[in-house]
Image (cartoon, rainbow, N blue to C red; front, side, top):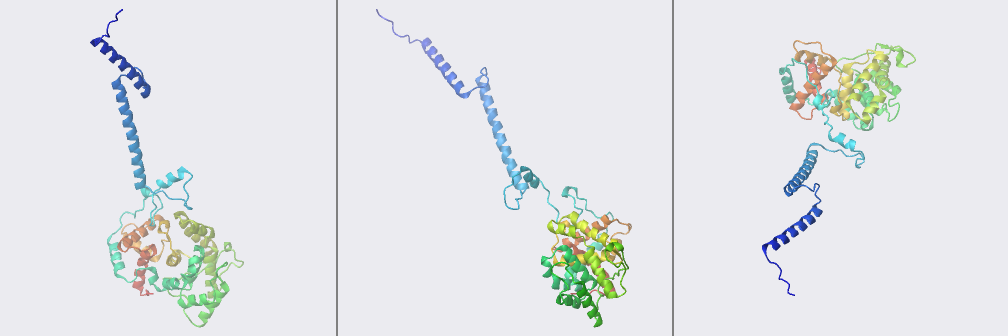
Length: 389
C-alpha cells in the first residue's frame, strides 16, 4: 500500500504558524501575569508604560524632597551626638525658625512686630550715628566707672553666677571709686562662696576711706538714698540708720543680696531665654520696692547692667525688656518724637531698640549697652561731667 506524500501546500504552513502563535502567546501571558485576560495587546502595553511613568515620578519627587531638606533645613544633632530616637524631634528642629540675635519682642520671625511708634524722626538718629563714629567713646568700658570694674573684676566674675555679679555691680555703683574697689579686693570683701560678701569688712573699708577724707560717692549722674526700710525686708530693726556709712551698706545688702531673685537668675544661667530675662529684671524691681523705698530705680539698674555686660557675655537674643526711665532716655524720647510724649513700657523699649539698630548698622559689634550709652554721654558732656577711662 502506497501512502501519499506530505502536503506542502500553503494551508498547512498557515496552520503551523497559527499553532506556534497560540503557544507563544500563552507562554508570554504566563510570564507577564496580565491582570485582565480579555485585554488587548495595545492596552497591556499602554498600562505597562503608564506604570513606568508613575514609578519615575515617585522617584523624582523623593529626590526633590531630599535636596530641599538639605538646602533649607539643618537638622540639629543631639547633645551627646547620638542619633535621634524619635522622628518628631527631627521634624521640630527642621521646621524651627531661627531666633533673632538682637533685642526684640520675642515672637517668631514671621510674627515679629518690633517697630518704633509712628512719627520717629530720622535726623537726630543720624546725628547720633555721626557722633558715634567720630567720638573716642565707642564702648561702655571707655568711661572711668565701668572700665575700673571691668579691669579689676573680670577675672573674678568668670566663674560666678549672674545674681552674684549683680550684687557686686550694685556695690560698685554705690561706692564707685577706684581706691575703694581696690581696698575691697585687698580686704577680701568679695567672698568665693556664700554669703558672697562680708558686710562688716565692707563697712570698715568705707569708714577708713572716709576717715582719710577720700571720695566715696561722686561719679553717678545722680545718687539715690534709702528713705525707709519696710517690714517685709526680713531685718529685725526696720528703720534707716542715722550713720551714712551704715545706711549705704544696708542699701547694698537689701538691693544687691536680699532683693535679687535667686531662682530666676539661676534658671537664666542654665538656659537663657527672653521670658527669664524679663522676669529677672522686673522681679528685682518689685522685690526692692517691697523691701525699701528710695534705694533703687531704673537708672541704677541700667548702671548694673552696664557692668554686667562688661564682664559677662549676654546673648542679645534674650533681651526682651530694659529699664526705660533713665534721665537720658527721657530726653531722647522728646527729641525723636515731637508730638507724642506719653509712651507705654513696650513702646519705650522699641524706641531703644531702634537706636541700637541704627548704631549697630554704623559700627558692627556694638552691644546694646554701648549704643544706649551714647544717649547718656550727651547729657554728661553738657554738664561737663564726662571723664574718659
